[in-house]
Length: 339
Image (cartoon, rainbow, N blue to C red; front, side, top):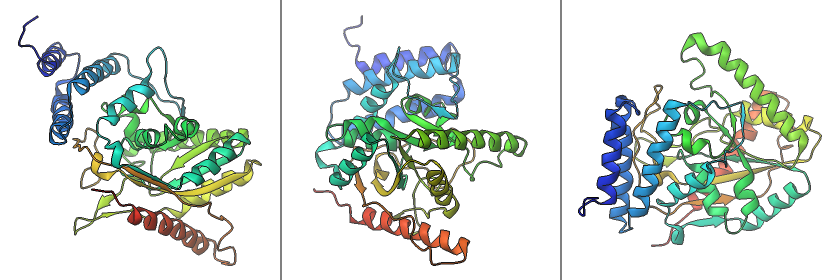
């Protein structure tokens, strides 16, 4: 081996080989190389060693190559793949490179205790949360892995189409428990697949109902249907919550016959891997990255019987969604990082 060889030079040599041999599609080169450079620069800026990351990214390349060769099909309910390769551990090791753990925070640990107690009794917990970055599931798992290992590994995430179809997102998604749906934002694109997507969503909702009926499930959902973005003045805003999404969960929980508890959850992860400035229909978004502290904040259980005095059902649902959004928004704004 060349004595001047470095982890980065070996990584780029393997990257070139995979593209030149058409193992990885040439059209993905820009995003794959760009993603590496973004994270590498983030590590350099934060004065963190990058050799471990280069080994992880080399592994990531091979996972992408395997995906191109043997595409993985996500079922409406996907259980994390942990063998023969542990995608859950891999995704945490990757995302951990970008987390300033010492400055990261978890608010409401006593509420996380309460949620785990519900699960241990065979009851359900639904986390009504905002969503800021692709690896939010990994961010949550990293923040809870020491204090609440059960919860960190058992949350089921309601996930949109993009995280199970975008090549660079798939290895991370394979390491999560997912209920896969097509969001309203993309269900009409392309038009000829709308009926198929609606049928898929029906199957996903049926599976969610069965999971809630089993009990002992923690389900995360972002009722906004997408990631938070910056407003015209450059300030990140918690996206509005969709009343129909929350009402659907409420009805499913009532039908499950298992006690189901609803908790607002605020995430502050935006700077780690921000979304594109505008919503993109086509797959293949470029990614930016930064080493940053992250945080989550659990709020007390929300009484879903609120606003029952409101006779107009649409207004009642909107008031409830707005009230839950207000809790998440307030908690998000309360999060502060030291230093």
